[in-house]
Image 1 (cartoon, rainbow, N blue to C red):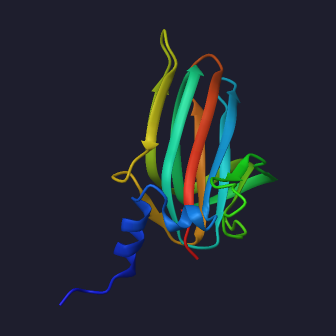
Image 2 (spheres, rainbow, N blue to C red; image 1 turned 90 degrees about the horizontal axis):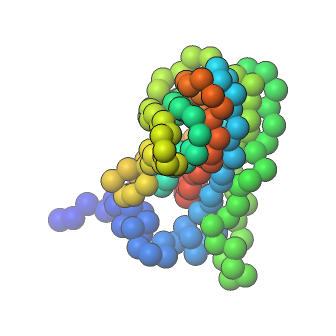
Image 3 (spheres, rainbow, N blue to C red; image 1 turned 180 degrees about the horizontal axis):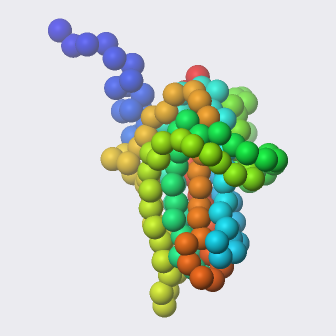
Amino acid sequence: MPIDDTRNDLLSDMLNSNPTSFLEGRDFRAFKELDISSGQSLFIEIAVPTDIYLDRIVLDIDAGHARYSSLAGATSTGASVPLPTVFPTNQRSDAGAYTRGLMPSIVDGVTGGIELDVARVKTGQNNQRTSVLEDAVGKRGYPAGTYHLVVENIGTGSVTGVLYAHWAEWP
C-alpha cells in the first residue's frame, strides 16, 4: 500500500514546468547588486514565516574574490534595511493573489550561526559565476526561521557583481 506523503506530491509538482506555486503566485525572485570593498562583507537577514523551497542561489561576479555562505541560527547586528529588489516570478494578471511572507533585509553584521552552504568565486580574465543551488538536486527545503546570507570580499580589490535567489513559499 503506497504511503500518502504530500511532500512527494509537492516535489513532483515543483519539477513540472509550471508548478502550482508558480501559477498561484507563490514563487519569488530577488537580486542584490554587489560592490563590496576589500575586507568588507554584505549581510542579508531572511525572515522566513512559513516553509519554503529554495530553488536557486547564484553568485555572479565580474571583479574580485568573494566567499559566499548561508547561516542558520545567527543573530543580526546593527541597522536593518529591507531589500527592495524582491518580485513575484509570475506577474501575469491570472496569477493567484498571494502576499509574500519571506522578508529579506540588509543588516550591518551577523554573529554566531551554523554554515549551511559555502562557495568561493574569483575572477580572472572573464566573469565568474557559481551556482550554490540551481537545479532539483540542489533544491533545499527550509522551515520557518531566520537565516542569513553573507558575501565576504576576501581579495584585495572590490567585489562587483550580482547575487540572485529564487524560492517558492508553501504555507
